[in-house]
Image 1 (cartoon, rainbow, N blue to C red):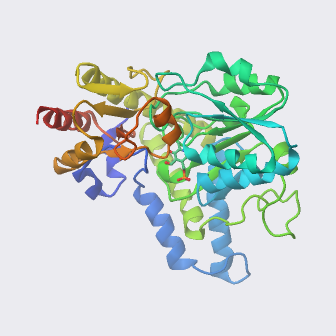
Image 2 (image 1 turned 135 degrees about the horizontal axis):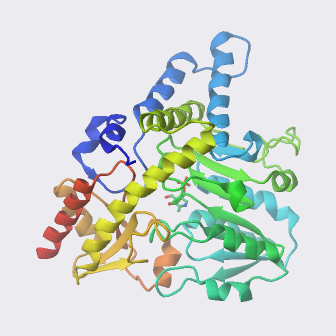
Image 3 (image 1 turned 135 degrees about the vertical axis):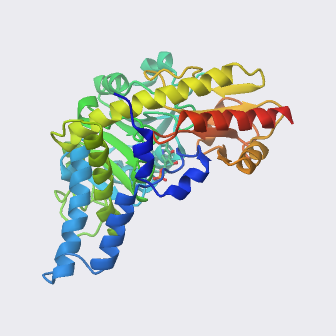
Length: 409
Ligand SMILES: Cc1ncc(COP(=O)(O)O)c(C=O)c1O
């Protein structure tokens, strides 16, 4: 069975398709269902939630529904899931919450492959006497697995690394690395932001301690999600008001709280996935299994797109692909970063836009990675072309034709 992209695209505002849009790793489009849920909330429930008056009671129900459905979707309990403004703030709050559990001289191992969101908050703990150890990347912008055993030791308290790089699209072995960290008694904090639009989140199966991702990259509103194992959330020090007890897992790590209309609109992601599952004849048992099955269809379709793009890129002498030169599903998601010989990335993005093709350029907050692989011009950085399940083969062809035109100039 193949993903019916016509049906998929009919679920989104049609104006989007005027562009061949390839900046999906920055933020994905939201389907009508999400817009509808947000509008519904703002129309009917824009009051302080949780009081007996009807709209207020319903406001809380709608917010809770968003939270609960997203927890179910990733196979977690609601209290293991913190929905807050963004991944960056979730990582920051988490780092502050774990800090009091550690001693001066304890080590935190931080991968240079990370987006700064899963790097800076840990590095800041140096101010409190923690020792930050770099996990360097290989020359071809991958995790240096050979270096890892020597970097982990009995003083390592936490290892922070990405599931997928937002630059290279390469998939890392989350369960394997997690096991290695656990063998040394260290926790892991995995940044899944670049993975979650492309792979179903199965945090419990992977045995990760903390897993971060952002709903606005997963076809939802601008919110971030922190999954944490219950036992660690209980131990972490609350970062909200003093009167929230340490066993109030729903509040303790969420001092900003979620945006109300946005958390209510998360239901729309689940609506969208239900609609797709139904259309494709998938048997819906629970939201977790539905998501897993549906993502299999995404994976197959995205692999098609990725292979087509890689075939083009590897056939062009002046195109340097950062990361794995394959479209294979086991290796990567369809997020590509390029350097075009003789063309600055900012110019290339501008010229692509003139041809109706949206791509991004820059360092995408993975500055340490770009520096590590010798990209000095961080203003231009790389040209990033990132795909989602709603992209088509025709759009990939439009992208590569636009890039060919740019290279010919
Ligand atoms: C891999 C990765 N991690 C973290 C983030 C930060 O997410 P947020 O904007 O929710 O803070 C991003 C955002 O682009 C990202 O791509």
